[in-house]
Image 1 (tube, rainbow, N blue to C red):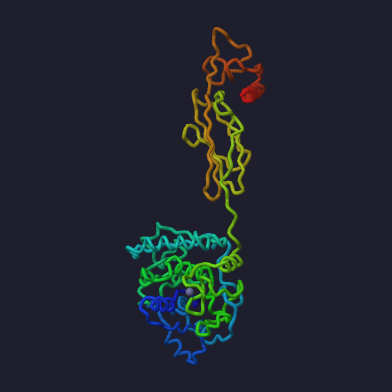
Image 2: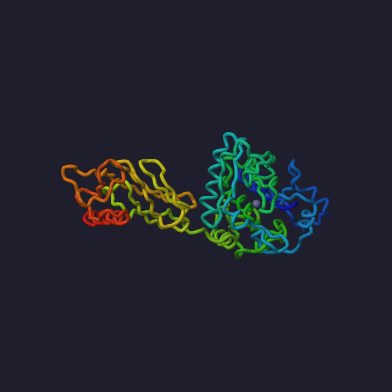
Length: 418
Ligand SMILES: [Zn+2]
């Protein structure tokens, strides 16, 4: 759909910074308020417009179409801030999308790129992802082609020359791909800026999650900061919210997160998913150090809630894979000698757990000078009967089925003695 908002930390942010830096005090910018008594055309002419044609309102919110602009200009009902709404519906990501908020960071940031990488990851992993069930996923492989046309990521992060009109701007979840960008002005990197870059980008990421400016709520008393009423309140008013401009009667000096920010985003997207532990894996048989026949069973037990597969590795080579319980493998006619057995359990998140044992496959060649009359057979064709363990055969006779049973018992007995 056309005409959705994008969002940015506005000139308001810069004004604040300027006041800090140069001693000049700028008033907060006129945002989407219709209290200015300007005609729509007059008001529109005052809005900052990017070269792309996007209007950037409310400091860091981008709007593309005229109809939406008019809605904003004409809106006069103070409301509750929080999540952006359209037609009474929350504008937010689906349960699937919110776990795959992929982005690239343009190489065009040059020397500033590492700062952007660190700030975004800090705001995501140390912020939004700790407060709600959302996942921002940085995809460095797309950095060399990190444009608004790149559909391999959900959004791109690029430098912009906004001439200080804003520090950064973002978008809302209903923006088309072309508008889904976080744009960062060079002023955001000013070392004297009192707002950490991480916090500026945390604010922008809040917009990408659907959050509106907290200062548009009537409780702020900042009528000059009122935007429109296209939102639904998620929490009580929070003057210190990361989404509240300090210069709009806010109480935060640095755009940091608050307890209500946590409550609000958790209310919108659910609290963070509980930790997903790696699979638990254990060997039931054979025992570590056991001697086994050429054909033997590897019995494992795996406990996990999102198990993808269980792999059996023999001497460092993948031998078998199972995707459903029971996770018991049969190794057939293995060569004589020591063998390293590893079982790897891998879950849907790619987390794996390995357990290792070492056994020895015994030829079982019977000493021809002292043949064992109960030897179960000659499966390896060496001319000698197979032998389970030294002198521990259980006399299963010549029946194949019974012989196998006998082997199993022998192994069990050995284990019990250990
Ligand atoms: Zn903003």
